[in-house]
Image 1: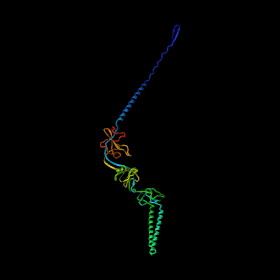
Image 2: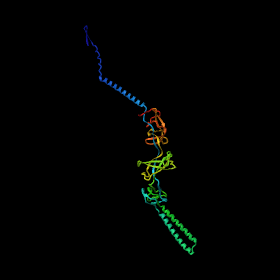
Image 3: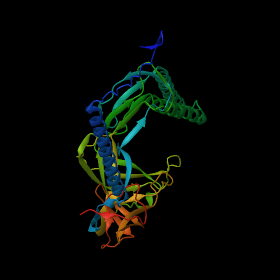
Image 4: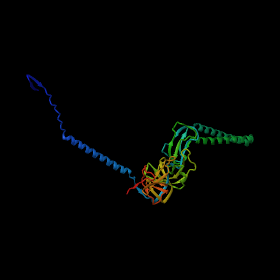
Length: 378
């Protein structure tokens, strides 16, 4: 405030205060350093992503790498596969020829029996009584003939009466023979030498006529019975070699030759039965299930490729589709349809479609296409 004197009057003049301008605050130097660091990190990250994208794009754009091999020459054995079972050549399923109650059993499962040996008896009281009655009638008829013969010699009996008595004696003798044979039917005997594999009856049970009571098999002679698919049976021949494998003997192969091919197939399973006799000293046991490979062809100088080189089209009727391989020509994969023969675990026989000089992709990818550019691995 200022005071001015004008005459005798003093005036007070109030001047407004000068405005105070704000002083800008100084930012720390560290803020600019952080911004600079962030920008540098962002630039480096951008360059890294660009580099990775470049590398990935180069990799993806490159043709796929494949391994190739040339077909080789070697022996090929073509075989058909089948499943089978070991069964006895001599066996029987039998019982009593008459109905009755089982009174006695003399054997159990696993017992050895001889041909003609008694294995069971039925209750035979009634047929035995009929036989005794017939024998008594025969005795009476013979006594009647003796009496009539004496009377005829004395001339008091006609010849016709004696002949009638002789006829009655013959009828009584025939009845004795008949009832004796019927009595034998109540005794069950083994029809062959062998082992009791199954017994389907117990003492006291009533069995029907010709019902199966026992299954007996001879272990001296055995054979393989295999069911071959109807699509493969045309190639099987009598005398063809086969190899059988059983789970009970995983490290062994049992060899045999085809001895019989059934002329009529099974319409339900669409298979044909093929049999092969086994040697007497075989380890295979009756009832064992086996896998069988039957040889239908052998070639000494077949064209072979690795098993993985052969691919197949869509399946047809439950079987693999058309076979093909990929050959490499002028840096590109070429699909080649082939016809295969024998198929093994490591090699496949090529019957037609390839040459010895072709270069075949060993294990083609599912994504490999015909005409696609490829790189051959060194």
